[in-house]
Amino acid sequence: MAALSQIIFYSMVTLILVFSALIILILALTFTKSSPRVMSSDAAPVANLGRDELLSCFLSTSSSAAALAQVSVTWERKDLSALVYKFDNGAPDLAKQAPQYKDRTQVFPGQLVSGNASLLLRSVRSGDGGVYTCTISSSGGGGTVNINLRAAAFSAPTFNVSGDALRALAGGWLPEPDVTWADAAGRPLSANTSVELSAAGTFSVASALPSVNASSTYTCSIHSRLVAAVSEATVAQDYSVSAKTEFYFGAAPSLLAPAYLNIITSVLCIYS
Picture 1 (cartoon, rainbow, N blue to C red):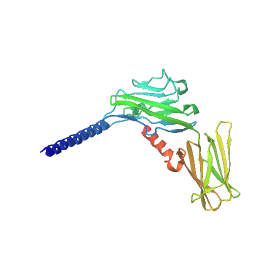
Picture 2: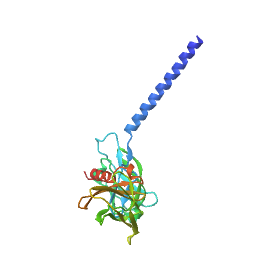
Picture 3: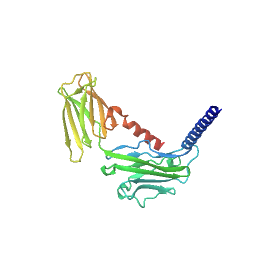
Picture 4: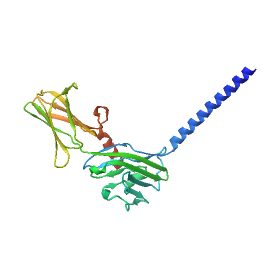
């Protein structure tokens, strides 16, 4: 009888633990689905100097049918005491805005009711890099998210054939980039490359790949620690060159997705 009692006791304990775990799981899933979160589609963007950059920030809720009300948005930068941007009570509130952001920042009021508080930063400067905090408060909830903006300079190279050498020229790079070449099979090739600092404070690249063949394709990669421009250059029979370039963020471009796809998608979402 004692053995049977122990079996019944331990069975009941096991059932209690199982049911407790199920209840905790159900509550966790319910809380996760119902609780709004402030998110970003790109928490580590790389902005091109002199170009506009969209810093993504939105309130993700389980219900998108109802429009939000009483939406307040504050953008800050962790190394600044002044604000980057603030929108409150249906209008911008820029009394405490840092001077370097004057006339260079905006949100899109028509998008706030759907929870989109993304910030447009115009004409990015090298001093704009840093960790930004987006804070949303609304009738549907709120929260914060951090976005680590890195400022760089990059451009697509142009190609031509001079003699029997395939030349790549690109200006306006920062940080200082490296250049590598490969053939159609991915084998590395040697090239004559110069990287020079320009008067504008950015680097210009000139690289020549000697002894190229007609009807062949070569890959030129210009890459800094933040951005890579990977170009496929095809030399035609008449030694004209056609090329396509994709930009990648990060030090290992072969492992990353094209950058401009994310930029275009974000801009379309803002203006739709």
